Image (tube, rainbow, N blue to C red; front, side, top):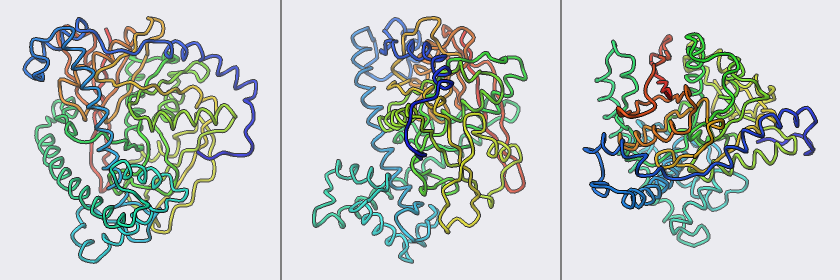
Length: 469
């Protein structure tokens, strides 16, 4: 977030726009957040009976609620491991705390022999001791402190170094396992069945919940929305109430090609989705409210601070780097050049370090009224739902790279919770297959295939649209 000038009250035109979405936002905020009742989840338990945990065998209301409370805590605890994964990503790819070259996962052995890895560990430990105004280092300093490592203690450097190496080894082993699972998924994909691309075997079901975010999922969602409009599934001005599940916070990506830490942490998906809905005329800017569901207090606090600044007429700046050495298809390049132009204005981007010679950059300052149209709520989509009035339910819910963190039983619960919050005919868009039972009110209605094929780059992604009956 980059403040510009002195904070001041919103102009009257912005206030009128904000008042247009106030009623919808208040209806969501006033809704009761709760675990669904045993009666509501019983059909899922019956369909998924072969996958139920032992505590839910022969379940009743009391057992269901006890398990829900316990499992909600377990899901939230996975954020901690996700933060440790982000720490490892920063160690390998970060440039804000060191001048050492970045280390690719496949080049760790060579980096260890050359001393580069050790130098990066030493530099990161030094950064944890004295983070200055580096947001990421300040967060990690508190993270290791919570793990019992005191940055002020005399033995901190050695202990922190061992802690970093231990987590690096864990992540290396996890990535090896994940690569094997992903390869198995690709081998099972059926060219004649586009929906098979949604089958990702709960790829991250035993991994920490990460806050990674990036541009590609937002491009896939815009392409899907474009497809839905072309098919007549969505019409001009139809969307007014939207939710995003787990939009993430750009700490540093797990893939080197998208891993940058030279700009402040940011969230992208809420504003990119708002932008796409306006570009495609599926929503009107003065009649669109966007709710963010996230179990991460860091994400919710980030949105809260952005809204505080927006109330003082200070916009929210997003940085949009693109590596020109990496081949992108023309549609993706066009999206990168356009994203944000419906919700803000172009501003001078932060100049990247010299280590990125092929990096082209853009930056957009999102208008305050758009930021104020976004509200973050604490909600575990697997185990919680909002009990909304019929006229306050969502037209559209988006969740990309979220359900891959859960097993099929959890995915089934999440699908029913999302369905309960959609209005009749409302859509859930996700790049994962979610099991729907015969009694479910929401199911897979279609799939949009997004191609990334270009010279030197091949790939496809599927986005499924689940429709509420």
